[in-house]
Amino acid sequence: MSSVISLAQRSAAYLREVRAEVDKVTWPTWDDLRRTTVVISVFVVIIGIIIGLMDLVSSWVLIDLLGRVFQ
Image (cartoon, rainbow, N blue to C red; front, top):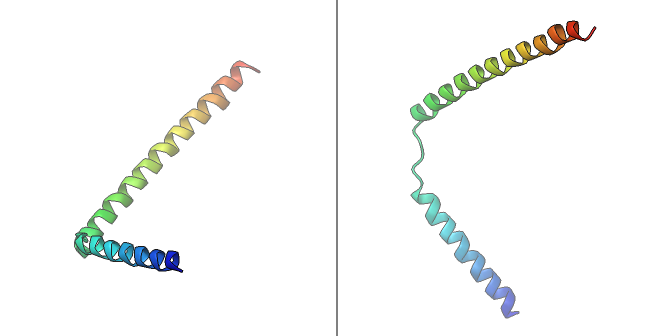
């Protein structure tokens, strides 16, 4: 029975500590959140275009150029 009480006390202490740490967090403002979301979205689109172009070029090299060499 004492182990159950000990576990409950440790759990309660843990949750109090978690709450205290969450209160210390500096949350971004809505403007900061919107701005960073736009930056990340633009970055993802740019990286997607770069990867798409790399795929297009590599498939052209491997299929068209090397395909002609080994026919």
